[in-house]
Length: 182
Image 1 (cartoon, one colour):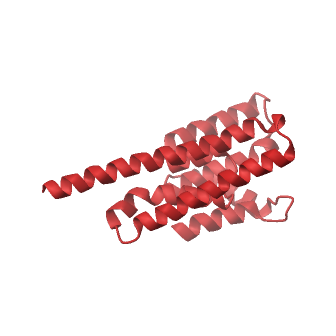
Image 2 (cartoon, one colour):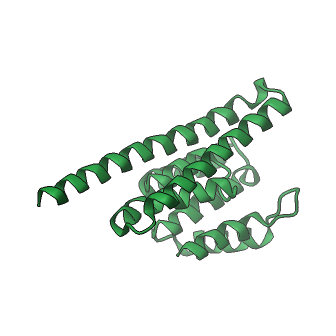
């Protein structure tokens, strides 16, 4: 029994440290986006690539840590998924990545409400908030949260139409990642 309690304590400590490390990396991405105007393009891209490389290393560590340990795998599965989403650019918004990794659907709902309020108040256009709304709704679905019929229709219609300058279909990429992990 003591051995089991010790294992549980070690696992809890490891999970806590890994969550802190992932939080730090997401904060680093958020800070980078906030300071983008202050950096030249080369410095911005270099810093972003370094952070994404750290996220990739983090994911590799999670893969090694969870291989063969079902209890630990259950504890770290959301961290792995959030890390993969960040690396693959499925989520562009660091705040959405962070809340998804922490499995905080209530905060994601709050963020969605704030986004809708900003559109109503004219702080942002509906087009400006579209990608953020797609990301939030996708994260909520992946966390097993119910979304309304209107939200589902918005998500489906937006995902099928939205492309970025590279030609990659962002919504399909996000939903593909979500469906592959379901």
